Length: 243
Image (tube, rainbow, N blue to C red; front, side, top):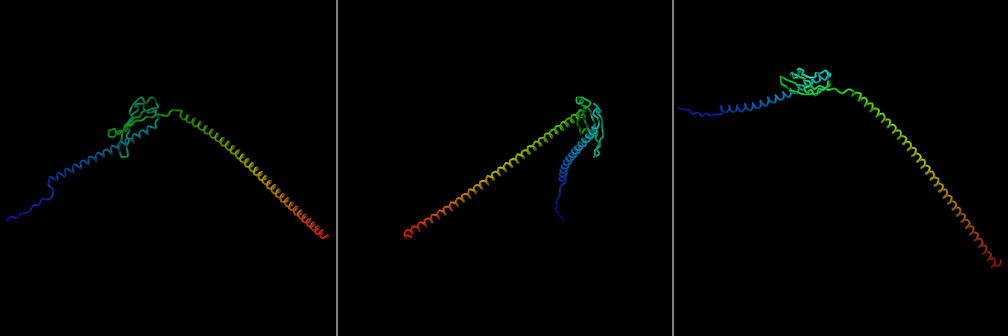
């Protein structure tokens, strides 16, 4: 008697697993290579920055020396500078690579080269020189000239202010005189108006008195005429009656 069993095949085959592992390995290899490249670029950039700081440190030390005491040619170094990241940098100083720049004792061409583990990572050049003598005297004379010009300007401004004050006082006096003249004219006008008023009042009083006198004279004349007429009438009556 035979028993048949159904066989079920679930999952991946060995070939499928190997293909998947190869794909994952390629992806990890690409990611790791890009990561390493970016890490190297960051380390190189940091090394360049620290190399520039080392070169700046050496240049700052050279600034304390007189220029005529610095070498006119040759290379000095290396000077070992250690950064905060515990990396060591070798700094080489070369004087007057181009002799045309070092025409006198007061001029020095300085070239800086910074190496890290035998590789040059930073280079720069500069020129040290001194100021010409007598510049202080020139500046002091110019400052004295500027002070004298400022004093003359202040004197002229004070004189102009005085003249302006005198002109303002004269304008004030003229305004006061004009005010006094206006007051005198107003007083003359008031006097003339008062005189005219008085004359008009006197004329009105005289006219009133004349009118009164005329009225009184007319009344007296009328009275006299009435009395004469009455006397005439009485005389005529007497005549008619023969009295």
